[in-house]
Length: 161
Image (cartoon, rainbow, N blue to C red; front, top):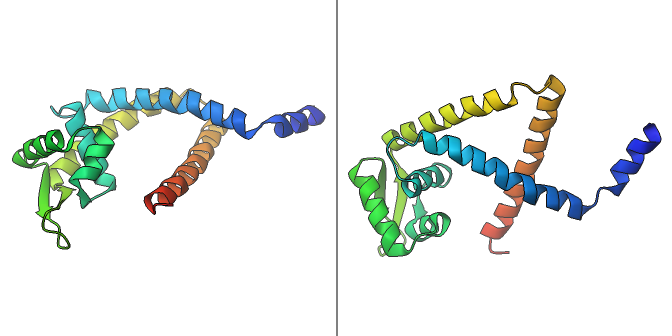
């Protein structure tokens, strides 16, 4: 048995790991998005995604959010106007370049996102409740490893390298 485990460990290639990521992560994201969308406090999906993005990137530009959400700048500007009108986010002029604005989420916007995350997390907890302690520990270890890999990749790409 020990010999078989060693053979399995050495036969796992980078390509197999990459294929498993490509097959599994999108499926997991669909489930997470479905749970988040059920609790989006009357917001449209693009509005909700905008607020989610701003929680991790406060003070970001309109063009960065538009790129993330997948909208044109004029459409993103209209969406932001609606969120500002609802008091869920604010727009401030950039101190370096007055032509640009910086976007940030307000406390009511944070509350809406926090509530949706808590409800989605509760539903995900139900999904993993049947796992053994060892399986949950392995899942947490894998998620930590993926977070480190993806954070490094994002940091490198954000630096323009």
